Length: 347
Ligand code: HSE
Image (cartoon, rainbow, N blue to C red; front, side, top):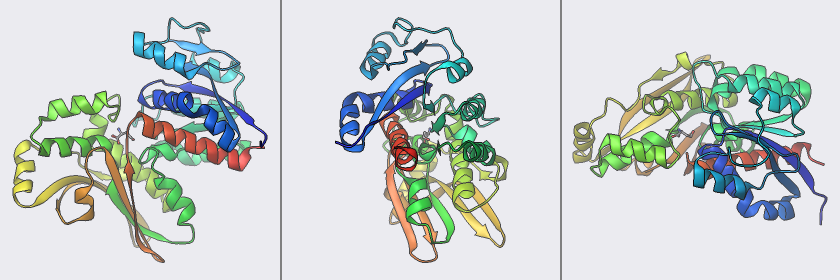
């Protein structure tokens, strides 16, 4: 068998994404080791209100998951630490910071500070948090490059569906002139369920229960989450320098059962469409509810599924459809970044 490389992970945040990652490690950690030669150990979990644990030899993901399922927190587990995330980053024996705290699109904090500190402390960083990546990517990339550390953020767009990796690596050599798609799972789930006659409030609550929505779901329904993803797509894939305020944005809060029913009666469907496009020397971006005919390819993308179409010069349109939100899908994004990191940096 090939040599095994151990990666000791610090998790910040243990919500839907952190638990999704723990489930994958619980269920297929051994297989990942056999297949890819990576021994992935959660050595620390830091949460804001639900306890912080650290064990240098690793914490069984099943134990973490059982604790949360039974008590809603980690405070009864052994190896408690009264440490802030900053202390953990500086003091823990670890290799990778997995940053999964709640997204803050106002200033990207505290996640951005955790990422900076991790890079200063010789930790690779993998995150699904849109705040640091939408708002501070150039600086964080520079810090990672200077420190010769990996910075992974595939999970920031379309969760584990490889929207960024497809465009960045498999479409390398093509010029992308336009990107458009459905990039927010929560709103797509809400619109799909409302078409079935369910109420907005009930469906939003279900989207939260299923782990699709942000901690503050106004970021989803008002289009900020999709706008952040448009910024990431534009800046990573089209060499743009957009800020969140550059995105023309409208969410789905103006859509009612009546407007949804009117579209249905006309053979159409509302979708929240994100679009990034070149206009002369500029790259522009928008997020808008859009009425699509049922025959449109994006009209058939329902539930928390996302879809993205890259318009390229050499291949024409290339479309990717897949999971856009949810704990397991986002947990997988972290695994896929770890495996890429291992390929690039592992022994
Ligand atoms: N709240 C986000 C969504 C999670 O619904 O798409 C995935 O980024």
